[in-house]
Amino acid sequence: MKGTSYSKVPTGIEGLDSMLEGGLPKGRIILIRGSPGAGKSIFCSHYLFNGATKFGENGIYVSLEESKHQLFREMKLFNMDFKSLEDENQVAFIDASPIRHSPAETKLGNIRVGRRDFSLMALGKVIQTKAEEWKAERIVIDPLTALSLQYPDDLRRWEMMLDLLEILSQTSATCIITEDLRAPSLAGEIPIEDYAVHGVILMQSLDMGKGAVKTIRIVKMRESKHDDQTRIYQIDEGGIVVYPTTAWSI
Ligand SMILES: Nc1ncnc2c1ncn2[C@@H]1O[C@H](COP(=O)(O)OP(=O)(O)O)[C@@H](O)[C@H]1O
Ligand SMILES: [Mg+2]
Image (cartoon, rainbow, N blue to C red; front, top):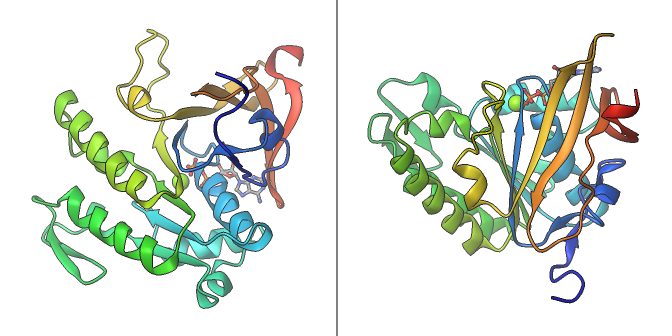
């Protein structure tokens, strides 16, 4: 294969797009795995916010953990005003977080689904409809963990994953799904999700002896050149900034 076969979608996150040789591969699905508090939701928000404000691309935030109110309030602290993006029809928010709390049933848009038989297809339908309606070019699902925990069986989870990826790829948007890093995978076991997606980015908080250091690594990005080093990033009031420093040089 000659060169890169995909055009790139910049995340707009300082320092990251150069690691990605321009950005995420257009129309593909990327998994971001990270420890709780690593900044996955901030990452997703940056991606959609920059998409809307810098690159003229509409987005959809599918939240399986935080309510719209929580997320909008938190992101305002990083100078990302999602309320006005929503008012301008640039970013749509699908609040699927009640799924985690409601024992009986929950409402996704106009569709009512029971928790027990909560169907991925119902969520998929809402995503599809919204994606068309909003002409979304960027979609994030944050975090998938809330959904995958309902499928403890590997085979069922694999099927769920394939169904979800099918729904997302039909939208032709460039998609991010996030997942909590539970136990450090020292055993070298590769989660099944990694085989199904186009790319995997790992965000971790490592104890380097002098306190915690946040690191980011592009684990895989099919058919695309990328930086394979573990780099340092920080979160401050401007959000996420990735530094050229490698984790081994500090
Ligand atoms: N004002 C701030 N300055 C620096 N770091 C912050 C600030 N606000 C939040 N953070 C960091 O952001 C993290 C939360 O990010 P979030 O995207 O919600 O994580 P995740 O979704 O991966 O659980 C916190 O753990 C904290 O380290
Ligand atoms: Mg989060």
